[in-house]
Length: 261
Image (cartoon, rainbow, N blue to C red; front, side):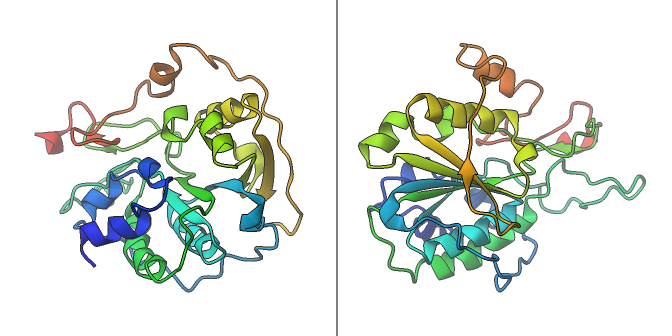
């Protein structure tokens, strides 16, 4: 499959949710990704609502894990929607700094990149209904590990915005009255995703949470009002200090980097 075919498998014209698929990482499929184990079991999916229940799922796991859980949900009738918004370290640059041993890129998106192509091949064979509910796929590590970035390092930390998702009104208009957040720990809810879920909650979309590594059933999720919520500064506040890529998405050499030219 070429780039266009891979993207079309993930964002088919027939799906109303395809307009939210981020093309950023697909544009870099020529960069060699890290092989991802597509045979790895996504675990017990008894928590997954039937598609007839019209629930939107938000998968917030490590990038490649999100991809493969998205495929598992597609096999149950959901339409996976990749929202990966960071670009990879440019090809030819070492992953680790030879002198410090530090990772050159703030976020390793290569496993995610390595999962998108084989994921597309499996996805293209699935008879997903045009009206299938969405499963939005995020990289839980999108904001990096909290380290301070240095010159000669590649800052591809990213955030998601409320505009990266359909509004509560759009969800309700298409029969989606509830949303389920899938993570490995409730305490891992990041500020950017908090704003997204809060906007849905205020729009009368009911929220639930489930730990993908736990057999417990989904529980109700209540999002308190976070700082800066609903203000005109929210978008700039969330992206402060991050580096936009020229071609879209997030990713650039730190100021002072010799690699950046």
